[in-house]
Image (cartoon, rainbow, N blue to C red; front, side, top):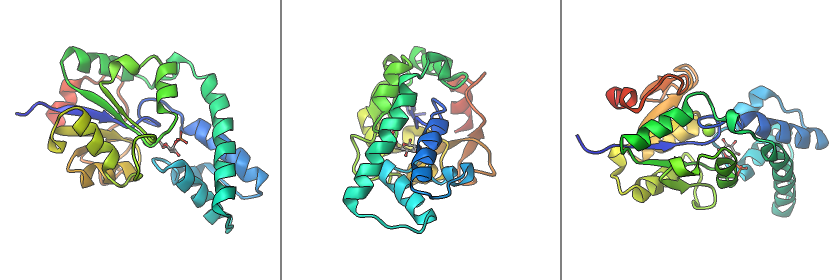
Length: 216
Ligand code: BG6
Ligand code: MG
């Protein structure tokens, strides 16, 4: 069997930042008098900042110029970053740190494959930078998921063939991106929410890299 590598999405896989994204978008939506619910927030998972705002505008049946969109995206990010400033190391999702440490000990290459432009800031806050061999984030890709670019760049950075990479994702767009990149996709969540995944885990608590290798 060829050497395998792991590529991790960030938001919702390594850390539960979705709640902070929601709070920041919700505040902005209220300012713009657009109704925005926690269910609507599901549509923003895995989607870039600008695309997220465009979905909110669509919900509100509103249009804006590119300049206005940029203004509000920056405003949202500034608010989101006030939550990130307070992020604590124990907000890493259960089992993730142990899983990454075990992968490192086992010599399994690991990369981040995230749409977030705040990824490095978050990983530094959580003290996880040393546990990832490569970081591919929103600052290094031009096409958002479901385009496979972020994961293909991850495979390349790990010097692995895409077929030998296993992606961990909590979003529909991310699962599609992994498949379009010819990678296996482990859904972090339920089969019901992520029907296209190859296998599912509820999280990393109690999970070891060999458990994943046996699944794939
Ligand atoms: C993804 C999140 O990881 O990153 C999305 O799932 C978010 O909800 C996207 O919009 C971009 O993040 P950021 O931090 O660059 O605004
Ligand atoms: Mg995610």
